[in-house]
Length: 356
View 1 (spheres, helix red, strand yellow):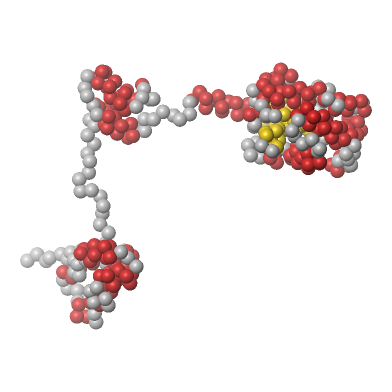
View 2 (cartoon, helix red, strand yellow):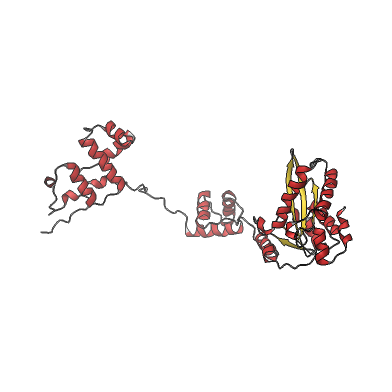
């Protein structure tokens, strides 16, 4: 006679066990023992506690049990119907996988044809591809099948054009960044420039600023916009101020430093040096000057930023004071012009070009 193997899903049918119901003082302890032995999940053990409370504490009151555990009555009723006292596995979550899965209905030939058409027309939708499929292969195919194949093989166009990506990569590779740039202590070897955008009582105003690396000689001019055209105008004025001693000019990646500004740099033989993205510490001296021009000039100005010609006249007067009278701590309390004359042996008349 063949022995009957115990069914692990029905532990009470196991033969030869010494842990029968009569060995426990109550049904609750008996259930908890088998829940531990069957290694039920935490959620299943919690549901078992619902049943214990329902049968032995709440006197079979579903409303009282639901209230005690803070659950909806419908949820308790659902698990009460599933519960089998001789099969605690019934309290485990059941798989929600459908009994009948959808089958892949696209044939190998259809799949191959769809891939061929899609690769030729990456920007076409499934409706256009359906009509093209009918003309090329003389067979009707559903748009659902076409979409399934597109999703399966991820047949979608690259969001960024390859040529644009390559052009951007080459342009980035050709840039010279300030943190790798080797500076030389020569007058006019490196200038820093930036644009400060200020909203003046609802009107947009821009102050282009520039400072020389060694001497801290500074220049600034106000405009209504930060266009590349205005940036080019500022560069030409700066070049006149510096007696054409501008070999390298450093700035951030703002749009105003491309277009006409970039073309002017190429024509004048000026090398552009770039800051790293979102790294203001690459240009600390000019960042400080941007603060100074707002704190010492704009906050004290009687004209503000309303009338641009009048503003630039007032700003130029302040720049003369900044470059010729105001002592600088970083220059051992010399003025920028004094430091330039002392260090580079330039003519004292060199600074007269500030008055433009």
